[in-house]
Length: 319
Figure 1 (spheres, rainbow, N blue to C red):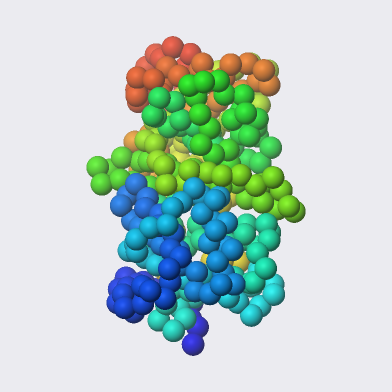
Figure 2: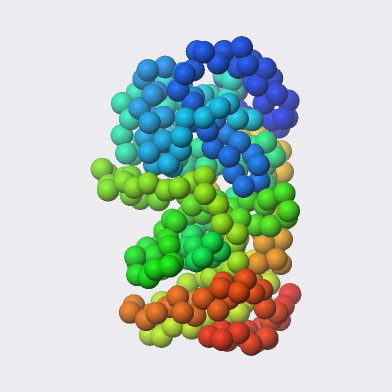
């Protein structure tokens, strides 16, 4: 019998771990993914019909076949032909993710979206979250360029010079590590999979410390302005909401969703407090990255009003 993911997820996952412990040989194909907060997931193909999804996930997310992680997610064949109606559920004691046979780009997109939603909710909802933004890396440090669709994230990533590197151009998964530092993982771009799109490959297991979040706006010139904590929080909430899918959350019990949203807002508040937010005005041809480098290169988190080369202080209040 199938059921939606219940409130007491920890008990269910513990039962699932014990259930699967004696069945390792049944699932030879297993992908492993561990986030910077130490939480591990594994993806298993329960039948030959679901193995193409596993191989696609391996290529898209640059994952390797690995050992069993804390939370195993079983890809099972669904009898439904409409992938929009396939949702994760507890089936026969397993955390099962039904997928239609005959994997296509559109189907894979929905699998990625719902896997992301599932992984930000387990085992404790809201501990990790997706932001609508590009993840950039500079000498091992990370910044997130957040913005609506069409704001210029992909164009900005394509223009970055060495040693800058774009890890993703549309989404980042943010976690808090054991030292209380925020780190971000790149996440695949859904739109590159739709309608036989060009596809791509993203190093999802890689993470970088988040030194700044920049909310981009098109302009005739390049400059960066420090935002107040409240302004940054508002932008983070918007970027997080844009990565949610109502059809998935409609299947989750209301009390579990309340816990998820409460924890998510706590995390976003903490991120706005610990990591500086900026408005980045970006021109079509200017060297916008030169405005960011002084912040990232020295790992500076300046107080509002302090002078950083290339950065204009905000005149708003901190709260």
